Every structure is written in C-alpha cells, then in structure tokens.
Image (cartoon, helix red, strand yellow):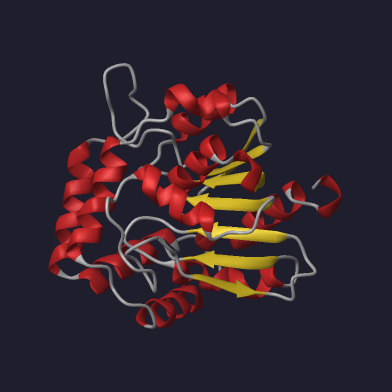
Amino acid sequence: MSAHVEIIGTGSAPNLVLIHGWGMSSAVFAPLIKPLSKIFTLHLVDLPGMGASRPIEPFNLHALADTVGENIPGKANVLGWSLGGLVAQRIAILQPDRIRRLVLVGSTPCFVNHAGWQYGVNPAAFDDFARGVNENYQATILQFLTLQCMGASDARSTVRQLRTALANKPAPTQATLQGALKVLLDSDLRDEVANIRKPTLLIHGDRDTLAPLQAAHWMSQNLPLGFLRVIAGASHAPFLSHQTQFIAALTQFLEPEQQ
C-alpha cells in the first residue's frame, strides 16, 4: 500500500505533514505552500483513492492511518484537516513514534451525533454533500471551498489558486467517496483520545458547522496535552479564510526549539 506524497523543501527545515479532508486532495493546501515552505519541509499527502494516490481495500480508518503512516517521515509534525484529522489522530494512537507534534484543524473524534454526543452533525448533512458531489464533483467541491474562503482578504485569489490546483489532480471515484464518507459516519475515537500523548494544537473556527466548536472544547479538555486556538469568524477551513492568523498559530506551536 502507498500514498502519494509530494515533498517541497530542502529537508533542512522541520518536517510538516499535511493531510487533507474528504473528497479532496493535497491541492486544497495550495495557498499555504509558499509561506509554509519557507519554514518547513512540507510533505503533502494525497489520501488513498484521492488525488494521485491509488485506492486501497479495505477502505477504513485503520487502513488509511496505516497507509499514510508508512509514507511519512518519522518524528514529523503532522497536521490533519477534517477527515485528515481523524487519520492523524489514528496515527497518533497506533503509531505514536511517527509524530512529534499534532495539529488538528476543523476536526473531531466523532463527526456524527449519537446518544451522549451532540457535538457532531446529523448524518443527513453528509448525505446531502455526497449527493451533490456525485452529481457534479468539481462544481460542488469548488462551491464548498468558495464558502470556506469567505472572510479572507484575498478570497478571489485564493479561490483561483484552488481552482487551478484541484484541476491538476484526478477526481476520486464514487467508490472512494462513499468509502471515505462511511469513515466519517462510522468513526468514533472518543474513548481513545486520552491515548494521544503528543502535544496537540486544535485550530478551530467558531462558525464551523461540520465540526462544531463544542467538539474542539471537548477535545481540549480530554487530550493530555491539548491546546485550543479558536479563530473568530472562520468556519471549517480557517487556513483558507484566515490564513495569516492560521499560520501564526501554527508556527508558534511548531517553533523549532520546541521540537
């Protein structure tokens, strides 16, 4: 099994692994590459079946974490956004030696509401999004990302970069989209969060409707070394809408002397 990883940097800077969300690819991080590559050696991961990575079977959270874990450098700083945050959490639980510091963006241990957990969303919200992607993948993804860019001072430029970057990556198959959706619907890591013993920064928008802020507060209280940074006015992708604040929080947490 393998995942496509694009490495940008000379290797002299600290390694920073970026793991994207559902139905997308590492192209979603295109607006971050220029500023972050001046500080870190970036490892841009395409999750299995997305971007330039081949699909895998079985397709579940454990297999995703194993595949990504095998293809990233050891003792790396790992950032996971949304579904990528679930994968990053699983790596931190199962392969803690591969992670130095963890950054979870718009992520949660459980995305769906259950009895005793009302910090997620109704499963129908995922079904609606999946239906739109099935009907018109490019249009739906771009519409979603455009909404996530609202509040950015350079929103138009960011959307143009994303449009170009996404067009250069293959669209995932319907089987991959459905498999990844099932991971979001079925995963519940609440009982294992206490086993994540790496310093963990939670970057969360206070307007996030896919991963409500209450989930981030819960995580910050239950992670042994959790730190929460709330970005006011941001929704599910603060790295697009509030890039300056996002990069400042990230770099402060990952300062080389703290490695």
